[in-house]
Length: 162
Image 1 (cartoon, rainbow, N blue to C red):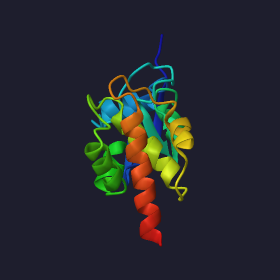
Image 2 (image 1 turned 180 degrees about the horizontal axis):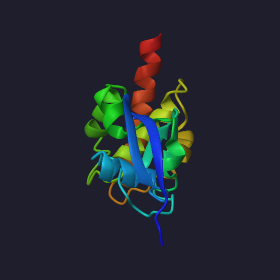
Image 3 (image 1 turned 180 degrees about the vertical axis):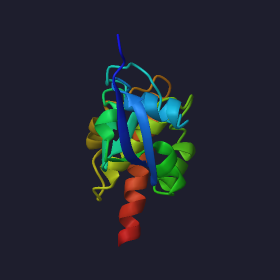
């Protein structure tokens, strides 16, 4: 049986990447194995745990459900790129202050998911925050501290705009 391979060209964290991948390679596997960007994790491999969350063309997606070949021509941002750019520095600090992380396995996906909500501006309700992160499993924190951290950053950002 011959393997199907695809040539792809995409931008990952601001860098243009040209690679040949197996057609069935998931985006998260490509990022982790070919590019050594290991911040996004492989969890359930069914799209329900959120550990593999990345941004594609500005929208969070499950990297285990998207094929690398589907990203040909796309802009992909991982937790490493978003963190290095300083975009989520306040969220990261709040997660640390509020003890909103423990083992850290879910943290990259939680941060990207929270940032997507907060990019809309304003201060979302705690119910809205819970709804936004509901697709990200955390087995350590109990979520309360995560909601606290996200709410605190939303309030800080709203006050900074005044």
